[in-house]
Amino acid sequence: MKFERLSITAAVMWEIITLAVTALILIVILFVLNPHTWLWYTSLWLLGALTIALTFIYVPFLYLNASFGINEDAIVYKKGVFFTSTQILYRERIVFVTVYNNPLTPLLHISTLVVSAAGGSMTIAFLNSKRAKELAVLLSKEKSSIA
Image (cartoon, rainbow, N blue to C red):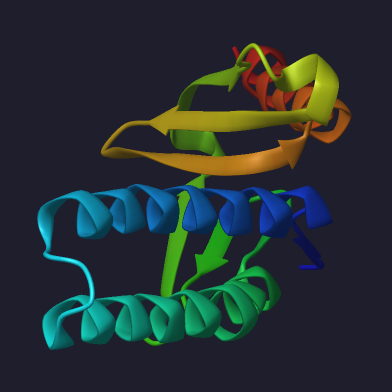
């Protein structure tokens, strides 16, 4: 089975989400804590260190470790940095396949593929829109040709 990586847009989206959460926490720190106190400075330094670690260390490793593969028997999705997980859905158990789009899809060319099967489902986020549609057709076509 040949595994494919997610598009680089996935890493960019994860970094944007990290920076947005950091900005929200920063706003809370600035409005809740008294300025120019040791707790205020410590919170800002810890937030900065955590942001740098997440943005430049964790997210790139997360991108490098996220991959999926399809063969005639199953679809496999591997993800995780510290605790890796592998999801396997057998193709004969697939009930339906859905491609979710959001308002930013035309701009960023990303979609979310959800494969539902008896016993569970698999969600692969931040896929290239074109590739997500190809995978949905491929997985649906196999199911319809069996029936």
